[in-house]
Image (cartoon, rainbow, N blue to C red; front, side, top):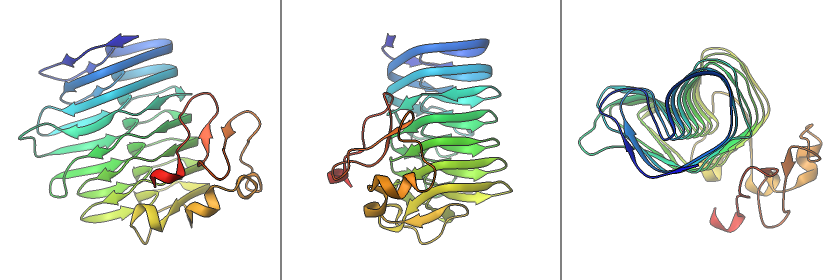
Length: 265
């Protein structure tokens, strides 16, 4: 566990680790403000390989350089391996006088590995003129996302999505987003734009996203998402993975995330 502020003047900046290339990191938590350029994350800046399990961040991740890319609430760049049972409530935002950025996400900026049983609730705030590939969970995604959700507001220029900004490849399964999405073009309630890949049993809402379309996913209502049986019928596992307080919260990851309380939406 690390509490405090970390500031880097270049790349590979993380609240706990700047650059990681090991087999596994488990049960790590960061709270504070992490500021850097390319490859900056609340927990790890650049994760070349390895499993990240039970990682948690809170506070703020600040993009400190114009032209930076791969910035995330938990991990900036995730090369290969698996992110599992991780949660970020960190807000990700541009620093003062910073105008451009790419691949920015509430959990991961750029991901080529698998993400499962994870969520992000922080706001991802860039701008609507010079920031691209911005997502509530992942900015630019190459791989599978399974059992995950996002709730924080997402703002970018183009390729902006509630869950994923740009889905290059892979399948998104058993996910939802209630993130408000703000952008100038190529925006979507769940996914801003896709190259390939698919979405299975994954949902977004018009009332929360303020969007009318999504490159992937099925539109539903908040009322529909708060009914457990609706999701059980879509093969969501409420025995070991998901939990829900019907009538007062939306689905959450058991033992990992804070239930999204309905009254806040």
